[in-house]
Image (tube, rainbow, N blue to C red):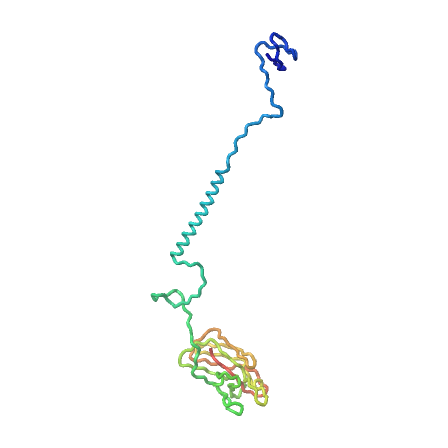
Length: 262
């Protein structure tokens, strides 16, 4: 048997351990304890790790389904637009013809077009007789495109109140005037006719529709000036009346080289 204290093998018949002196128990034999291996500790059992593979597979499947859904939606949208003739946003210029193929109104109004005004008669309040410097001081000089000719009025005043009248048998659409002020010509002697004579400063334009507009011209030599009416007029006649002048250095008659209507 073995000692229960030190584990010594006790011969039969001994009452005490021959190694440590401990009394021998007779009730039951002592089992020799099993020594623990040196340097080894008991390790608690570790639960097996769960695999991440199923979660990754699920994520990949969800992503593929989303991509597939987007491609299918794009395909069906493109097919729908192709079937309806839609070509995407474009920039275009539309010319309205005032109706569709059935003659119905399209809901927009086409802008009207007008021919250039054509007044058949132009008259003036007065004109200077022809002399050695010019064979004509009448209204024809106002539209000949020659700045060396001019209408010269022949009143006893400085030209204030003198006028040019345009007439036509049919209504004319007018929007403004083109003017070249004074008499820009230089004489052979070198005389500056522009500053020797009066030039137009203020004008009043009266229309056959019962309205009128006032304008002021610049005192500039040989320069075309444009007068735009505040609104277009449809008229059979219109009159341009001088309301004030720029005074000349020598003569008291007022001159105007060009005056045309547009």
